[in-house]
Image (cartoon, rainbow, N blue to C red; front, side, top):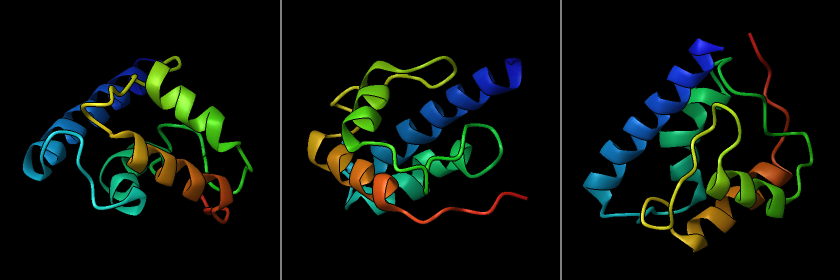
Length: 100
């Protein structure tokens, strides 16, 4: 459980570092956001697998904004609404990722 909490905070740190270089909450698109933030936990056996589960984009957006357990909440100043909608769509329709 502690590992998951640390993973969430490391994601926040990675987001802050990446957002600082791109401007507050400004990302090229959802793919860049997923690669630089989400994937650190959700593809590293820290957070649950997201792609291939058919999660509704609205659910993904709500969890990102509100947080859930070890998943931290991300404000609109960290992830703008348009990029959040794009990453949620990509996750919702993405192919299953194999876990090691």
